[in-house]
Image (cartoon, rainbow, N blue to C red; front, side):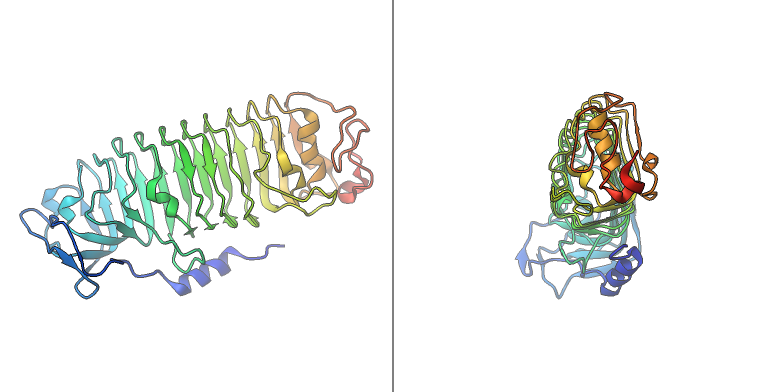
Length: 369
């Protein structure tokens, strides 16, 4: 049933490897940066003189800056920035790292003199003054020949924009955008494959979620506790969901219309397949499920505790979408929504005969609920 597998995708990605990091602007004259305390860095950089240092490097104070190159350089390892650091200037002309960890710093921006390329993982958490991520450079290969291994953007209380994080195309590990309380737009509009899943949670100022280019996601998509979120955007490119989907406790979302699209032709299989549980729960203003009643299949279905959603609308998902026990419509949990019965309503598979699926829809043992 699954067209691709996570194992196969990982194997093909790892075989291709990461694109080498460094400058894409040779022979450029640069503003002279620091390279450790008391050092003077080169003002030029080309592909022949970039120094590469291996191993991990912890930047916690000026005392940790020993033996850094005075010319442009890259780090073939993990850069960890934490403690009281408020500027990256003393790292000199650092052009790229494999993995980037920035936690609990005083940084307001990524203030390296040139864009900082990251070829592995990005982990930016609990930076109360951070407002600007525009100076990052991430892999932009839509074929996933180069990719990130993981993405975490969490608890950055002053951050209002994702900046260059919207460059993310392919991630083979987990991606999480959580608890950034001033972030107004969750912009993953360039993401193509998110093979370790995506969690979007606790971003209390975010009004929009953008997943326009996403074609495949594995390990689940969770959209939860985003109190100002009104739009989930459009996922029209999405073909494969190898995991569950949770839309929970987003009190400002009123409609799922346009999120996914399907041909309303009265037949099973016009929408995507969810290879996991579908949960649409505790969304107080949600009144429209859009084309979610045209999904091809879901492992299980729970549409519950949506105070503005009528039973008729909620039941259309449980009645029209084949789940993992297609002979048992009760596999779908449709409870505690706005109403408890449905007289006279109908959808493409849900008839007007008072809470019964269409008899001609054979997905549920003749269609009788």
